[in-house]
Length: 120
Image (tube, rainbow, N blue to C red):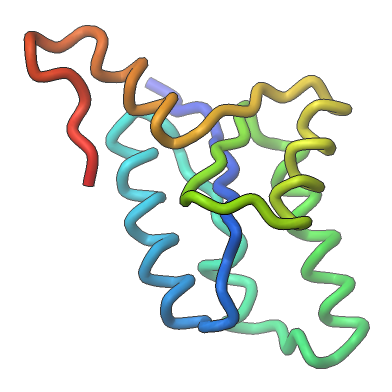
């Protein structure tokens, strides 16, 4: 079965390590819910230097392209910053469904017995 692509966004911190740790946890939960997660914050910083203006712009363009190819936008975490707002607006403009991680997990849990979805 082919898994639909799910673009992962969140209000990321300034810590690349904290972001990676959170992104891995979000991706795992989305994967367990039946999607193929795409999370640019996990891999773009491994080869792009954000402090170089052209590479920063290229990273934004690549992330936007990944969002365009996705079937759903998954908003993770508890905060909403400008990046998340822009991702939501882009998804809306492209008619891509936007939901929260809790929403994905709740729907996934509907087929289970009494316990419902498990949250990490």
